[in-house]
Every structure is written in structure tokens, then in C-alpha cells.
Image (cartoon, rainbow, N blue to C red; front, side):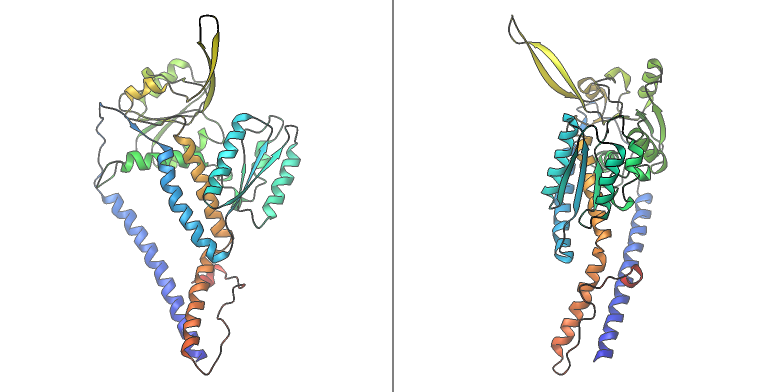
Length: 384
């Protein structure tokens, strides 16, 4: 009976290996078919622009991710854990970090904010990071940027265990860059098409801003992954030249942090405008004849009303790139959790033990031990 059981296991392993091979081949074939599909050129519509709502798209991703986390929790008896580190008391940073915590908990994750005082040193932050690196219940670590000027941001970022760097900074990328790309893929490349897709390869992408953790990763992603022609303008680019370049851009991505700097006259008709900027401005308005009232407003880096008349695709602020950045962080935390907790291995153990249980029930004379105990850790080679 034991020989028969071993044979069953070998058959299952072969089936699993074959399944993975088929899935890999299927993925390659799908990618090739996608390339062969008829490319559909976008024809500008003179009507209302398409609003690229990150809030709407992130909700779709959120519902699917929540189900997957619930299913994996049954296998490994643990949920993804996210650690959020905040230094100082900036209101904007506090708002961002609270939103990340709230979103992670809505997905079924566990999260904790580690608040540190403004005067915290680089060494003290790194100490906290290293403790979180060792914590088995922490699968993702996020350091809220910007940090106070006296702190060495690079040293802090590179102290994070690469497996837990869910912001993707150590790989010279960022969750924001992929969030921008996800928006383009959903609203422009696929959009309302039933067949085919709209390619952005060769499109002229103008990135306004060259910050290390946002502007540059966005430029690199579109240049290296999407084969776009990329131009980066920044604070040293003369204003006239900047306007010329943004007006030549098919896709204009704003990450400069200057409220409403890009106006309608600075972009070409039919452009795609993606506004990453979030700026807090205060305006004084007449309340009565004798008094004025100060009103807080959130604006992007483009003048939305002016650009929406010219552009065919545009992101709102807020509700555009922000929700997609957060959702990318959640997806990365989930991926880190699956890797660190060996969820694939847990799925294989479950299947093997189901075969054992079925075989044991059919036998009346021999009692065998489980093929793989719940505590066994499989190496990657043993998965197949």
C-alpha cells in the first residue's frame, strides 16, 4: 500500500509540474497573441475627456485582493502584515499613512503605524527598520516620505529587507510609477475596446519633475518597459522650453509639486494628462462685506479645468494616482506575504495530504502517517 501511495505522490508531483508548465506556456502564448492583435490607433474625441479615476479602478482590484487574502489565510493561518513608519507630525504625511493603514485593514491585513519624533536620527530609524526585518509577522515595510532633512533617506531605504521593500525603492522603481502605468493600461490601452489594444510604444512621454523616488522611476519605467520616447523637464528647464516640451507630449505626467503649474495652453489637443501632484492651497474669499474667509483646497500640478478642455484623458486630484499608489503597495505586500510564508508550498501540502486521506479511508488494514506534516517546509525544487 505504501508503494502505491508513493506512486500516487509521484503522479501528483508530475501533474503539478505539468500544470505549471502549461500555465507558463499559456502565459507566453497569450503575450504573443496580444502582440499579434490589431493595434487600434486612438482617434481624439472632441467631447468630454475620459476621467481616469484611480478610486474606481482601485476598488475593482481591492475586491479581488480581499478574496485572495481570505483564501490564503486558511492555508497558512496568518494574514499579511504591514509596518508603516512615520517621522514627525506633518499633516499630509499623517493623512497618507492613515489611509494606507485603513486600506490594508479593509483588505484583511494587519498593520501598525510606528510614529517617531521629528528629532529622530538616521541610526534610530534604521534600528526600528532592522527590528521589523526580523519580525515574522511583518511582510511589508513602508517609510513615509519625505523624511526630515537631517535624516539620510537612502540609508533608511536600503536598510529595509529587499523582500519587504513594498515601495520598490531599492529596485529603482516605485509603487507610484506602476500605479500610473496601471491607470494607462486600464483606461487607454484597453479602454472601451472589445478587440485589440492601444499601444503606447513610441509615444512621447513628458515627465515634469525628476525626484529620486517618483519622477525618475516613472521615466525609467516608460522608457525601459514600454519603449516610449521619454523627456524629463525639471526646475532648471527654462519656462519657455518647458512649455514647448509639454505641448509636444502625447502623455504628460506631472510630479513637480507646484500647484497648477501646467495650464491648458501648455498641452496639445488630445493629450493624456496624468497628475501625480497633490498640493494644499489656501484661498481668501469674500464672506461678507466686512470679513474674508480662508478656504483650504487640494490641487494638482495642472490647472484641471483648463487642461480638461484640451486633453482627451485626464486624472482627477484627488482620486486619481493616489488610490492606485496605495493599491500597488497592498498588492506588493500581498506578494511578499505569499513568498515569505511559502503559500505555494502550503497549497501543495494540502493537495498531497488530501490524497493521503483518501487513500487511508480506502484501506482497512494499514494506518500510515501523513505524507507531509503541516510543519514541513518544502524547498523550491520540492514544489515540483
